[in-house]
Image (cartoon, rainbow, N blue to C red; front, side):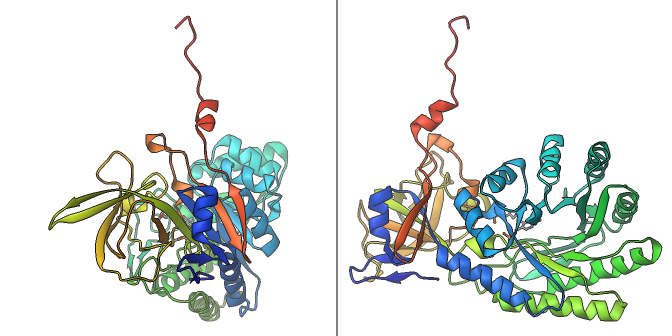
Length: 434
Ligand code: LLP
C-alpha cells in the first residue's frame, strides 16, 4: 500500500527510502511509517465526510499509535484527537495539540486525569459510567468550570468484521446500557448538572469491521432513543459519535471497504433517520485509529536462527516478536511479510516466523511463502502500524524498537530505540540496610 515499491536493487522501498538502508542505519526491529499514507488516509476521511451538510469531526484514536511527532502532524492536518489516558493527554499537550480538539475516553478515568483534562480545557469528555458522572459534577462545580460531554452508550450492537450481533442488554464494561434505562438516567442526571453541557451520544461497536450494517443499526438505535429523550427532557442530539472500527488489509484475505463507502453509508443513514424521526441533523463524529495508521506501518526484522523439522516445519526466528507485536499471540491475528533485501525472487520456501521471546506462543506468521532465506536477511512484516508499538512491552527485557517516519525520500527518527540505560533509569539497587 501507499508509497511502497521495489527499487532497482530489488529492495523494498517506502516513502522513497530503501528499507535495507533503514535497517542498517537504525538497526532492527524497526517500525517504519509511511507518512504520506497516513496523511492521505486523513484527507480521505475528511473528504469522505465533507458530503455532509453539517460539521463533522474525525478524531484520530491515539491508542492505535501515538508519538509526539505524530501528534504534531495530526495537529497540522487539522483533525481531532481521541485520548484514553492521562499519558496520551500529556503527550498530546506536550506536542502542542489544540486542547479544544481533544476528546477524552475511558471507563476508569482517575480523579487526577479528570482534573488535568479540565485544567487543559479539552474539547469534550466521553462519560462512561455513573461514578465518573458524579466525579465530573463535583469537580466542575468545585472549580466552576464548564465541560462538554458525550454520553457513551452500550448500544447492544456489536460488529466483528463481516457480521454484527444485536442484543437487548450487552455485557460490557463500557458505557451506559439502553435496555435497563441506565442511559436515560445518565442523560437526565447530566442535564441537571450545572456545569455539564451534554452535547450528544457516543457508541463504538467494534474494530476491524468490513461492512456497514452495524454502523447503520447503531445510528438507527441511537437516533430513535435521542428522539424519545428529546420528548421527555430537554436533551438535544447535537453530536452523534459512531466510534471507530473501520477495517484494513493485513493479508490478501482482507477486503475492507473504502473510507468513502463507510462514510457514505454513515452519512446516508444519519440523514434518513433524521428525516424519519423529524430530528435536526446532528454533527457526525468518528474515531478511526487502525484505518489511519495500520497499513502505513511496516516492521523490519533481521533473520536470525533456524530450526528445521523435516517434513513438519521450518522455524525461522527474527530479532523481535510478541514484545513489539502482541497481536498474533493475543488475537491470532494474521500478517504477511516479504524479504526486504530480495523482494522479487522465487517464493519456493514455506517457513514459519518465530519471535525471540521465551515462549512457544511467540509466533508472528505461520506458513509464510518466502524466497530462500538466510541469516542476516531482513524481513518486512506489513500492516503493523496499529496496536503494534502502542501495545509493545519489555517482555524478556527486550528494549522497545525505534520508530522511523519516512516521506519524500527522507527518514526521521520519531521515537528512539529503548536502551539498557533506559531500563536502569527506573531501577533502584537495594540499600545496605535491607
Ligand atoms: N473509539 C473507541 C471508543 C474505541 O474503543 C476504539 C478502539 C476506537 C475508537 C478505535 O478503533 P479502530 O478504528 O482502531 O478500530 N488492540 C486491538 C484493538 C482494540 C480496539 C480498542 N478500541 C487490536 O490490536 O486489534
